[in-house]
Image (tube, rainbow over all chains, first blue to last red; front, side):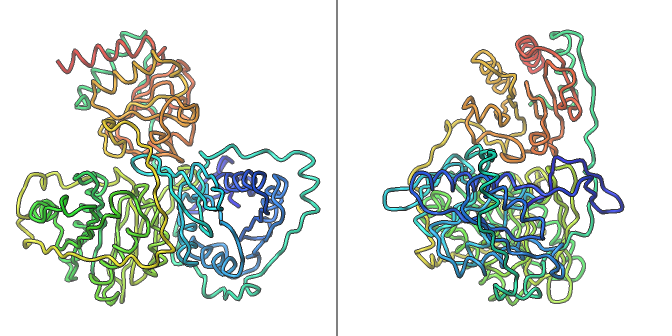
Length: 252
Length: 352
């Protein structure tokens, strides 16, 4: 669950104010859900979606159920002290406590969240669980023996990685185009199981998952000023800009 | 107090982004040392083969950048990106450098794809506080640890946050282009006058649990002669307006005469017109060249989020209302098929 980053927002006295208090399914998570559904359609199995968050996180779980997930688990932080300031480390510990007790073929995470773009939680959870992981996946296939072959975007190209089984994979939105739920799916999602768990159900103390990092203020990004715009005809404009670049020592 | 910096060497060259972090680390260490603290700057070098490892060469090179000590992990695993091997190398070096975590530490790394892959896991392994992908950071001693402050863009680069953490061990990854490198260090030998000749220590990495290993089967790389976008001083980027081979050829020619890297918007990498590895934007590469020439790019917020640290942006677009013009230093409203040939000819003339 993330705030809608395309919604209007402003900064007042160091705080971020969103005009609409709307939570949406994180686009990278949506790609993870889509990929899980594709694998399920090919090989069978079940897709379970899990979210940690306040009461309104349930809406995004319903969206994933409407896409076709079989059941949902909402680890609620409603009313938990300090939950509004939880960081990647807090979420990773909570998720590791949950997954540590579950059986799964693989765990899909979004590679980052659209609001913070930190990209830490996935590999943190893998480390805490002691399972192999591959990040920034742009494609996933499954071998006949159940092993996951992951195509990831690395620094120098795309790497095809054999991740085995019982692994954690963080998904890029370049992997697929998540389906838009249809009316039938939306109706069906209302009857699908959505289990609500509290931190104490997981044996997690709020005191043990308090954030290690604090946001002290939101500040404006110094805006780039629109510069000069030329529209006097291709040759003249191109000549003028080339000269300006030369004067600024940029034509190396 | 120990500052640790990670350097992965593949193909024998040090990445600019890594040197930028090193320069920032040196400046912070000097400031703390002048203030009565004792700070050492260490680099963990991960390189694939002993043949690549010329101790004298690296001692001179890294010494010139002000590194006090090098932990060298040479292992076959580093031929390719391997998250468990990198984690093991940094963990081993960190344990030795900090005397089994007794001394406080700052671990700072360039925010490359390789580092993004390990950052969260490494922080969990070291029990460190971590702030990812910052554009500025500073650190001071506090109590038994360090107090880190940083600035990082959030909300699709519509805002940025000031972040802080106080812990015995803190970690940070840094966006490329956030800091300059020590230019004067280039070409110098035997270290800067302020520094003793550096110590190089070989460490053997303990690979640990083999069940955590993933195995690369294949790497699909783009052509070997392409210029790395994270390193490029100039980037020519193509957007939706680049529709055919003629336009692609113009992009290639412009890039060639500026010795520029070629990037593309998500629309073109998705359409298979350019390789996904050159996608620029929030979900692709975040770049910070001296000069960025956006051709036929409308300037969607996700794209602009990937170029905000650029020094000078030039935009060429038919649509006078395209949002790219709001961030461009110089905008040309016109048809790229007419503008680019004139632009190329003029640049060639000016460069002689």
